[in-house]
Image (cartoon, rainbow, N blue to C red; front, side):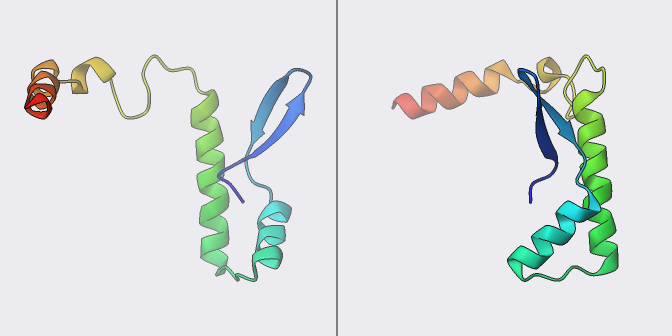
Length: 83
């Protein structure tokens, strides 16, 4: 069981949230038994992942890459490894 399900649609892949049947199949195949709250949280997390995957956004969910990249720190680290 992954974070979502995928299916082919023509030449592209379409992601969808995990269905209850998919989670139940995983439980049966793995021999693991989820508590009801765990079952629900897994499905909610899957829906949130797929929604975020398809959301219109200018930046990744962790923020603006340019704002979190520190060129001076990267340069210093690279220089320290050359020694």
